[in-house]
Length: 571
Image (cartoon, rainbow, N blue to C red; front, side, top):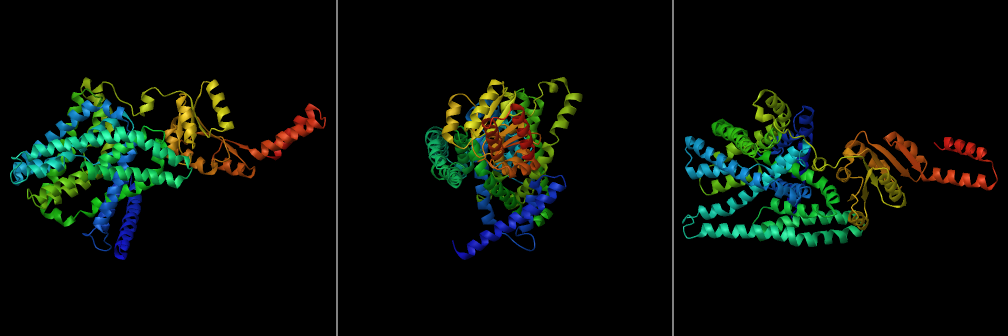
């Protein structure tokens, strides 16, 4: 990489992320989604605004990494059984919604002079939702791992597969012979074979190899190596999906995440990839904002408003009708419909292909980009209004709307994973005995342990265990700390100073019991919010004092008196 390229990369990252930080903070204070701030940051550092201009190509490449890591993270928590459970509504719903959106676009855009083929390609480009936006909106509203999230993500996977087919088939369809020589059907057949091969390779072969590789790396005990292994797997499989199977990198990363998510490393992998994922995902929104030219609205605003109407009205209505036809609860139907009312990365790619083949001109981009920005801005705001809207419709709407309201519970809660729960960090001598006492008392202990062999041994006996570092919020959430009654830090090797504030952020009311080596740390830990501190120095001092007093022949009353005085001094 040349010096000029290095400077461009650093300036783009620094300028883009700094602008995103400032505007994201401002929009958050205004009770808007930070996504709005990230988009405005892109406009600010883009080529159509005065002052500093970031490199759009560099920002777009970094954004692609963010999409890959985001989809890998989604796959970690989206098991194959979840996808199969929603296959009927996801396939039928996505196909019907895309067809309705495309047909509506063809009819409406004919008024703007678009040919039927141009209207179809334009309509298909805005029929698919953004992966990044949908997952962020669901995650921010704690709906990513609910039944709503499973349906929406399954729907999105079908849309991604549809887009992949389009990217391969459109060149064959738009070729001079129009596919008359069989090129279209050959391209279709090859694409389906490649997608099937990618799925088999990732879900079958990968399921055998990936956990073995991560297991070897985890046993080294080196955190950096494990992080590197996770990132290399996510990016490597994503690139392989694109270059060897002609699939999207996002789909390859999603499948890789599903494989890792079914292994013992799911929580730790999610925690290790989280910081990079969030930073690069922000750059996606910055790169979208950089494409926007405000001056284009002066001439292309009618087409932009029409495009926006199709995105935020026709698309959600089509999705709502399909979910209701499948007799899904009102809240689920509204949530899925609203979450799909936006467009993103694939829309720009399909629109660019339509422009390259001369189906329409630059006015398509001038309409799609601001419509994408507005829909991305409105989507989180609309999603927050689903609950009040559902309550109003159940109260004043037809009786059939009130059936089976769906609470926003986690998948585990829906499956009956309730009851008393305590998270135990560490499974040494102290942790093992505490777990035995908890089980004997009818309380479920969930162990967090860095030793992968210990985790596998516990799981083989049907006992819940999570592999990972307790200083990472994702690992604590995977262990169910949000629903737990207590957190037990059983060994001084666990940095209670670091774990406590993170645990409080996940569950503000959690009761924390900590084992620390030094008596001097006890007061500070109590100030941080630890409920009870057990110091090795204090317990050794008490045990040795008690032994010495008995050995000197002291009476029991005197022994207990001295121990009480010593406890008070050591508080």
